Length: 214
Image (tube, rainbow, N blue to C red; front, side):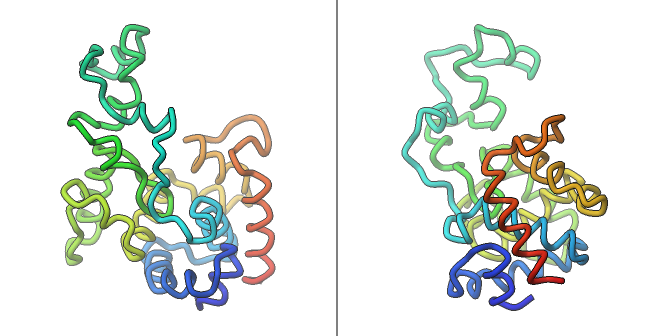
């Protein structure tokens, strides 16, 4: 998995592909992303989500959506997922789901990594999953140092971890690129074809990756 191959599969400039090549190769080997379909679908989605390996940290505005990452201490805070769904808790629904309980958590725990791990809860969760899976690795505490999840090694491993957690490999093995993209972008496969955000770009990169890897 050379920098040139990664560049062509992700739409990245060669210098960016070179910076990320070792991390991607390691992550793909560790998580069994080892067939043409698995590699093509993974790299195409990585390429789309990072703008060709350009952004390993979410661009911060903040946008209106990003402002919702932050807890509003003037609004009620839910005590459960079920309660968070009630209209009275709409203001803090997203912050609650992300586990952003402290002032400044919204910006601090913005998306990091090749598939944009977002929120205090998710930064801690990927730390715990990686430490459990790879006990001999010195996995950083991404809750204490969230920016480390944007380092190429951990950015790639966290992306492969997400693919494993969501069992995206089953879609690759079935040749279901739409299901793979839906699960990354929408959390689950939807009935409609091609309704994941950025579908056209994902598909273009996927076809390029298939051609390169075949």
